[in-house]
Image 1 (cartoon, rainbow over the protein chains, first blue to last red):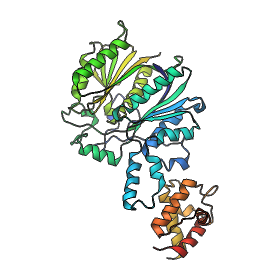
Image 2: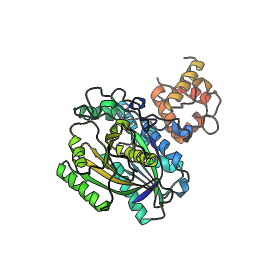
Image 3: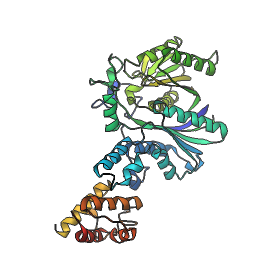
Length: 348
Length: 87
């Protein structure tokens, strides 16, 4: 377990707590692109070289790194890193026959450039790692943070999940059938009975430690599974709940990664069926779109909901009686075979 | 191409190539140092500028010492381009 002290996010939305769905940013050209802020905390000379993933990651992290010297490490989950720069560099190799190649794109293209750049800007030379395991990249970074805190209980870590929506990965994923063929508004994302989802992107950052005082939320447990077997997914969730929730405790909110793709709906429905009737069910992909580290956005959203004790109705799929929000179960699956479960508890 | 025209073209290329988002080409002075206090470029930019010279003007700089004399300001770069360009 670990405690979240600070959190920040760059996502397609300005304000996820708008109760009116009309006030949220809708998808544009079948994509939900991040609403990037003015990056005042990044020196202009550094910012000009940054690709989108690095910009978002660093831009989301720096405002919450209030005492970077005290951080014992930086742990980032990103499936694709700076994909746009990677493709620019590869195209250069072809165009200039592996001759004169500008190094900038290459430097920015590697997955570990986000954590690396954060280390440089905060002058933090401690543990610096990037997890790249596709749809479980963030869950694995989070597991790593928990392990670090077990070894070093007094430690404090920066944890994040970042992925950008580049032209290249959008086109490749589109050809593979990942996205919807038709234009879909976020208002009816969950009711279009068709394959595919809406592409998204974002960066979510957290400062975590073992200190319960003043913490916003506690990540009680995390587990992952690689499988496309429905029964294995259900069994995994059953065991996860049994191991981490006391008999007299219950899940108040099940935050589901349902993304409008009718091929993956069965996993979410199966997990919902295991919950008792007093559990509110919510969804978040209409706010951020689908991307490999969308679960980091879900954790950020969870912190907001626990802090405000208010669930906007566009998030709610199944409402139960009003009660204090204490325990939240996050479930996300990526492409139907990478499943991540997180149990989050309120600290206030 | 006239020297003044070449200078403006080079300034535009530098701004675009190095993604100097807050700099307008016409704001770069001909004798303003490119590195350090002037335009504030750094070592990675020097490699980008060498690549720029190769791609746009067919100039191949092999010797780093030679690069240091060329990449001083716009005047020195343009003087070198005028003498050595192959395209």
